[in-house]
Structures are given as C-alpha cells and as structure tokens.
Amino acid sequence: MKLTKTKIEGLFVAESTIIGDSRGTFSRVYCQNELEPAIGDRTIRQANVSMTAAVGTVRGMHYQHAPRAEMKIVRCIEGRVFDIAVDLRRGSSTFLQWYGVELSPENGLAFVIPEGCAHGFQVLEENSRLLYLHTEFYSPEHEGGVRYNDPRVGIEWPLPPVHLSSRDVSHPLLDENFHGVDL
Image 1 (spheres, one colour):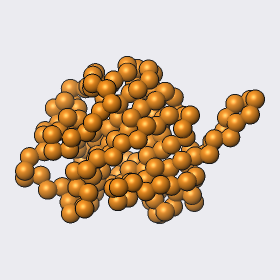
Image 2 (image 1 turned 90 degrees about the vertical axis):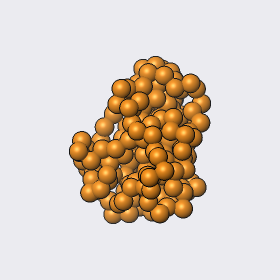
Image 3 (image 1 turned 180 degrees about the vertical axis):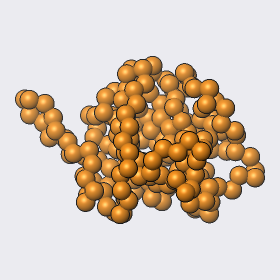
C-alpha cells in the first residue's frame, strides 16, 4: 500500500496494488504494518458496510466527539463515490477545510480519516458499497454532524445532492461560535 498525504494533517489517501489475471483481481484492503504511518498503534474496533442505491445521494457529514472520537478507513468495494473529509479540529491549521477523493474498486484507493474530521460521500454510480474500518465503537451519545451544504465549509459536490436523510439535513449550520472539536 502506498500512503499519500493530503493538505489536511493526518488525512491520507491509501492506494492498494491491484493484481489481476484471467481469473479476476486481488488487492489488500488493510495492512496494519503498511498503514502504520497513518494509523500508528490504533486498533480497528469495528467494520461496517453501507450500500447506497441512487446516484447523487449524499450521506454525511458525520463524526464522533471525544472520548469516542474515531479514525475511519473508508474504501469503496462496489460502484463509485466522491468521498469527503472536513477538518473540525480546534486549533488545526486546516480548520474547516475539506478534501475529497473519488473511491472505486478500480482505482484501489481508500481514505484514512483522522479523529476530529467529519466524513461523508456522494454516490456517483448506482448501488455503491463502502467498507468502513473504525478505531472506536459506535456511540450514539457522542455522534456529531455538519450539514452537507454548510457555507462555512463550502463543499463542492460533483452532482446536485439528493436523497439526504432527515438526520443529515437537520445538522446545524456552523456559526461564528463554533471553534472546533476537542480530541
């Protein structure tokens, strides 16, 4: 796996080598040793898979507050998505900046998203499936969110956003009193 730093500290794009022959393909989706520069000694505690049917659907922007803040490793295992991370960390030099990358099985990319960053994605191909690896257990009382169209963040979605959940459209806008999340 090859790790590439992004403009946001601690946010990486991981690229798997895809080996193929007449039978199909093989790629490593997780290797603690190769991902160590990004994940350190964190432990993967939970894995989830989501499937989103309709093109243009947006899910997110989600994160968990301390003491249940989590790092996520997100990989598209079917279809194609535009994956986004937003830096919400108090005092970060890239506070409220976002970074996006297209994920698909064909490009072999994964997003390594550090604690204190919100995560979301937009579906670019029908029936897209994502695999999530989390360093913390899901904790409803620690969950937080940023609205997908928050003007302070200014995410540029590739398609008009559609099919948002009631939860995702009800995240509050970030006002001038929001100075970030503590880790």
